Image (cartoon, rainbow over all chains, first blue to last red; front, side, top):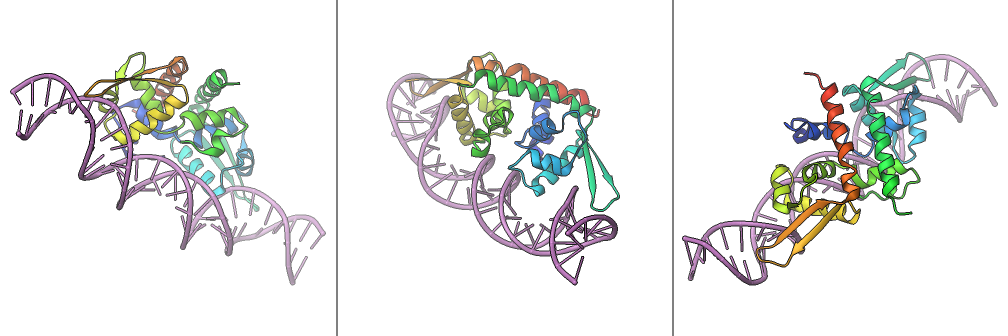
Length: 107
Length: 107
DNA sequence: AATACTAGTTACCTATTAGTTACTACAAAG
DNA sequence: CTTTGTAGTAACTAATAGGTAACTAGTATT
């Protein structure tokens, strides 16, 4: 998202939303989970995301200390992503969002 | 948000994000909390939102069964908003997002 | 000699979201 | 008789997010 009004707000919830409150980031965190996954795997798990947008989102998540990125100097390239401690702490919240939705979803 | 790819996804987390995963809705839920508040109060609590956008977001939240809207037939108009059971169930999650952010924020 | 492989990047274009300004209704207060 | 107050709406514009297609590197396979 990177909305300056949000990132510089005096309200911590607003800043939190500025950091993870967009449509892709919770999904990316949810896909990585406790694993170490490659770029292409994340891309395959989120069918509607494009590589360009996935790259952008992963870069922001890395900047915000939510994911680790390890690039191997090989060809073809290999880049592995995993959650940091901060990212792992987000998992129970993401799970609860899913549970909340399922609980109130009209069958 | 109302992204059709999200709302019709087979993944419940994706659908959940489609319903509350935008920048304004968690904030609106957080502002209403357990109270009954008027339109103008919400507007005053979220300084950077415009009336137009607030109206749109509240309408979607109402459609999704997250807020109740009660309009009194008076002049000047009075409209009161409160959280439904579904909306109230979102409060602990929103609080946890805030706690998560505060915990990992670099001082 | 051409093709596939991965994890991107670049330039360009479109769609969605958000902001701006002006306007409404009618009663009550000054 | 003008102003104030509330909760919007309409028309329009600006900003941002997201999508598309083409391209890169160097090794390994066909």
